Amino acid sequence: MSTAGSTPQNSPTAATAPESAPDAAPENSTAPEDPRIAQIHEALTAVIDPEIHRPITELGMVGTVRIDEEDTAHVQVLVTIEACPMRSSIERHTAEATATVPGLARVEVDSIAMTEEQRRALTSKLRQGRRQIPFNRPGSLTRIFAVSSGKGGVGKSTVTANLAAAMAAEGWKVGVIDADIHGFSMPGMFGITDQPTKVSDLLMPPQAHGVSVMSIGMFVPEGQAVVWRGPKMHRAIEQFASDVFWGDLDVLLLDLPPGTGDVAISIAQLLPSARMLVVTTPQVSAAAVAERVGTLAQATEQDIAGVIENMAGLTLPDGSVMDVFGTGGGDRVAATLAESVDHPVPVLGRVGLEPALREGADAGVPLVVSDPENPAAHALREVARGLMHTPRGLTGMKLPLSVT
Image (tube, rainbow, N blue to C red; front, side, top):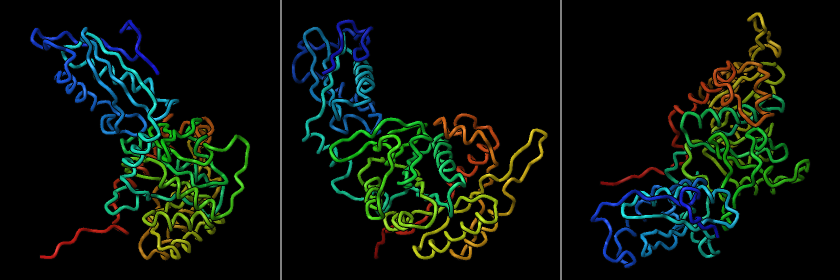
């Protein structure tokens, strides 16, 4: 248990309340009907859980609240687990919110871990009583993009991380599932070292740069390979989609492994509304391989949102551009894919060959965050804006109908 100390100004979980008006203090401050108790509960609706992003009052995280004879408010907070990483932050914000209630001389906040029964109740509330993939519910407005490539080495994961960070910087609520089970890279690219917080059988995804991220790499010791076959990878991705509390996301990005194998098929089955983003380089051979994604799109009846041409040219010190990997690959892929989905497929953007992109990935800080005005970062930000402002599709959504 964590308890506020005796000196309010030196304790993160204690706060001094404002001076009360002469008529604010009731005759019996310990009476159960003390109106300040209700005022405290009302004030605590402004305290948002940093992981779940909902008021602690809504989540059942407020325990006993009482006011003693000296007008000191004692507030108990129920954190999800004993080792809750956000414990001190929740305590501090609870103390600050409580201190806004007139008529209090002092605030003290205690925190204890929820019981297993309380955690199950919280999990049921977050799941809304049902275990399912929330993005498949009728009426879901989350845009889902599966970032794919025909082959490895084209910068697909770097593009995914930067698109996610760029969208978050624009104020969107963004999640990323690292679906590349064997070649996971998202934790490193976002600089995430923490494991997800577990509440009963529900996981709270770690966040970095405003993006919620889930990856098998968060559970695997460094240097250890994931030796799984198709069915186990399918189950892992299903759990990432259904057993993680994502909240109300505006967009979910999935970083797929290269090629058109088991994972790509699993994504089509588990998240049928996902649209594909195809990353390629200008190189002719890379473009030819990327065109095979069209076959997958046809077989799984998925739509293709567009093509991103990465490593499109290296800007030299004199300002000229060297086409290290050739030209035209993105346009060729887009034209071929358009035939597969029977509608135009745009080249969403061309991202130059930029060493800072690789450096940002190694450092855990996407380039769109560290240097948003870099030409490569600018190109990725434009792609992100374009994707977020395209109309949401209605594929798989049940629309309300009425008969008159």
